[in-house]
Length: 242
Image (cartoon, rainbow, N blue to C red; front, side):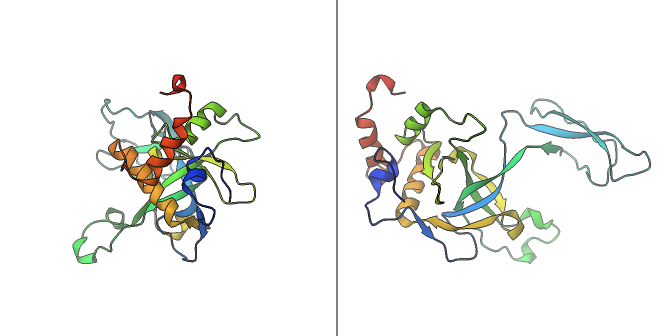
């Protein structure tokens, strides 16, 4: 793949270095490109609240009400028993829209926990999870997408939570990686699909610096990312800087 000269990839990579490389492993690794369902992270989440059985004598169906899930409001105990929606103390059923998106795996560091240490706890208490960051398409034929001015500023490294990237398929679709939406995905094979490519070593080095920048507020001064961003922003109009 080739990248624009005014992008981090275009500056940081030499002609013989690949941003994406084939993945031979059959399991996710750090830097793997996968496809999985990504929840829409609304500012205020929603909850499902059963309000009545669809058929009074059936316990596996219910009518539900969708309401805002606010931290400051006391939780109402679920009074209506529904087999498909068991109620537990201090828990609610949260509702999210989700879309299947390409994501990059940031961590698969999940050492095995011996069963004798988890006796009496459900499997979910220690089940392995990997951390992934989702990609969002920049342009689409059926929606407006991101404004070009915003995409340009992301390409020049003004925001630690966003990174412009190009996914490795024939169209080379420009996308934005959202590092502020990192979330867990189960390691079960039904929870994800490997796409056969992963970040190369230099790409992973840049991503690690980008994550450090987002989490700590700064990045190593001598890293590839810092050098690339300094060059990109050096030619920008000072009046447009944040």
